[in-house]
Length: 66
Image (cartoon, rainbow, N blue to C red; front, side, top):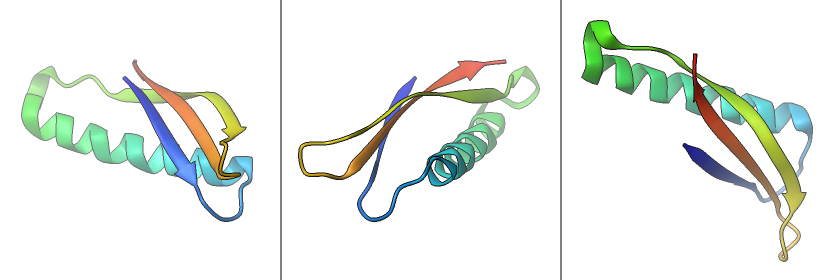
């Protein structure tokens, strides 16, 4: 799965990593509820961070199966 997160105000790599981590944790929680014992946690890999045309920061990250 590939996600795009947009940051409208300040940007730093720590913020992007924090957002990616929280989204991954929430997705893992929901997937675990759906799959039960067959659950395999996901982890994220930050793929790219760049400025958009509107000067916002966009972070693209990929969720990977562990």
